[in-house]
Image (tube, rainbow, N blue to C red; front, side, top):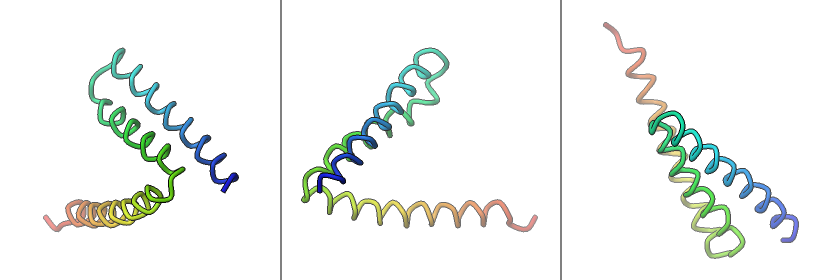
Length: 85
């Protein structure tokens, strides 16, 4: 369990970096990067909640759901991209 806590801390630092980078780019360039900033906040919260076993199961279930959503979107995008004219 202690090895997993180390990994959680390192991945939360990555999520903090995504949040900071998204905030800086949003302020300096454009607001088109704002969804990345919001995702960074969500990922940071989910990563930090991995310490508790109850949230660990919840995030694993969310991971499965998001996997199927992304798979479905990739299939739809390929169908749209390669549809006959």
